Image 1 (cartoon, helix red, strand yellow):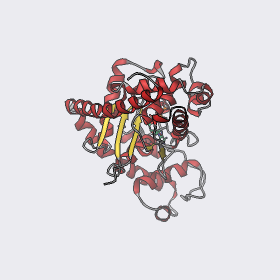
Image 2: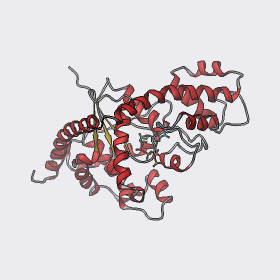
Image 3: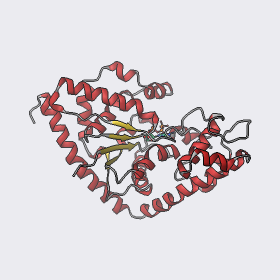
Image 4: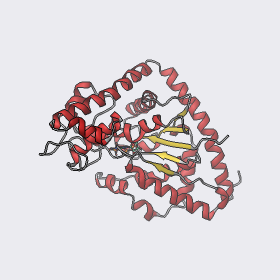
Length: 334
Ligand code: AQP
């Protein structure tokens, strides 16, 4: 029997999870769950790379909220391993080893670092080092596929470069080369208020109308979608429209499962109001069952914590064996 390919991915427990996180990450994880051996992690160590944002009590609640959202979005713990990154110390240990092999220039070139560093007065080393920890996350599980949004493509390329470098220096490490798995549509969901920037957790925290949070009220979701920025034309066509209309069309495409042609036919001659209503219906149809399942899960913390404990046990087994291989290859006494 051919064994399934290994998939690994994660979301940071920061801000409110939005439609971009759902379409770029969680939905594709759930949709392909039966095809792969899946490992999904709440990357809480990544979340402290902006330490000013951390409130210990809220942080703990947010970590459990994101884990519950994984399950609410359809990740089945019977089919996929779900765990908290900080409960598997091998992530930090491999990150240290990789740090020692990473040229500083590689990190300084990362687009996400430059963007985030530009918005902050004080930059912690962790923010610069974020891609190294992400590389450790992926490489620890001999991952073949990493389902992510387009914004993470550069970090996966970085991970491949680093794996190549380590394998060249220490061939017995035998790190597996991961490939990004980017959805054909919806890989970069844009802000509803400003379709020139990607829908983002941090902007969503401060700007109403920027994002649709998976746990937002129906009223807030309606307001955000119905006031989404469009353009002065009124024809909904994939090839001839501005970025705001394209964002709405892409959302409709991913969530409805219809073809581009069917969508253009459906909204032909109806103006953008009808398109927005259509998107709203699709978004509500996606979000309502997620919210219902999330509300059930929050009543059963014991189930959630047990699921995470079991997930961490399985993850630790795989991670420990990869780390041992890498340490032996380097010459550590293990
Ligand atoms: N707008 C997006 N469209 C498609 N996919 C997206 N992802 C994030 N934003 C979009 C994907 O969601 C996964 C988890 O994201 P994360 O928490 O690791 O990364 P992030 O980039 O920090 O998320 P945000 O929303 O952009 O937060 P801030 O504002 O704090 O920077 C990843 O697979 C990512 O590709």
